[in-house]
Image (tube, rainbow, N blue to C red; front, side, top):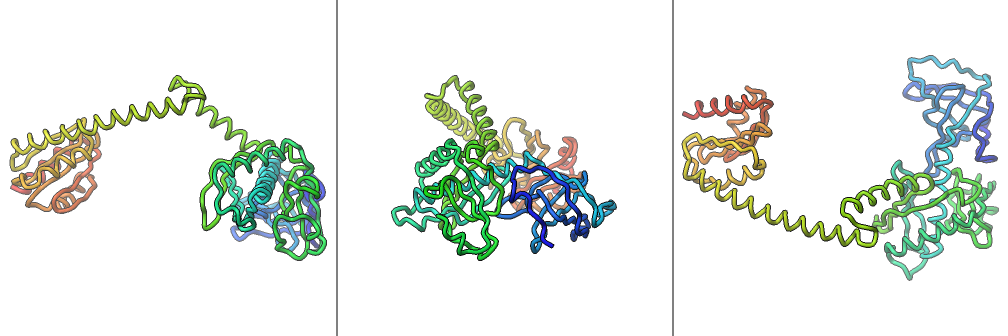
Length: 405
């Protein structure tokens, strides 16, 4: 007995009473409930399943299995399920989640339809992610186009939103055979021979989109709200479009506008001159970075020369301002001038950098750092040892110095 799919008859129905026809378990032990009818949409067509409750118990997953709709509950394997075959239960979907999916899926339909209408682009891939949606557009219907530029994407976005603002009817039709469905102005060839669902946005004479789809959609395009494209990039011979629709697109717009406003305030700029002021700030920062780079190179050179003149068999110098990379540059500059070993210490991180022309620094760290809980490594000429406490640094240096006497 197939499950009656109430969402096909009324996508806005949020709850109903149903009879349990089967109770089993998922491979990981969760209760798996089958009903005579359901308002839950199962995962399919690139769309996630509905969430909600059955008999007050949360539903974790919904999927189709040979005409039956299976509902996996959130009860763990150790919690007994008190639902039995024949029980009448109240089932209810999470409506905000359903409507979110409806907005996003319908927005994808209209956007795909506009890429097809404008550029002959065929949607060959669709993904509804948590942070954005993507469609993969193949330019195979119109030889005049071999790439999708940002300007082309913006035009498709505008046409999509114009279709949304027109509040066109969104009509879902079900057909038993391919022959009946193929009479509609489809933008994509059918992949099934029976039990076909066609979603059409707008009039059949000139639809904003018309394609086979098993997902859930609002009754009018205006309920999508808006569609916003974020990025276009080449992908496996096609073009991947990153976008969002509905309330998610609106929330993204709010977040990005807040960021833009913050930047305007920090740069004392308005929308008209924000980019110019940002570019000027970047140029100023580049100048400061260049000055800092040359200053550090000068300091490192002076420090290297000073150490060469002050070198002793077991030389130690500590730094609290220079970075580890700066200290490494100093150590490399000492090559050929170290009679025994040099210890250069980065105090903020309790890191000892070892340099030597005659002793294996990596081996010294490997054999001795662990005694004081240190870790690190390196090669023959240089190595590092990192410790949790500053006093271990001095103890480690003293140990190595005595070892090499």
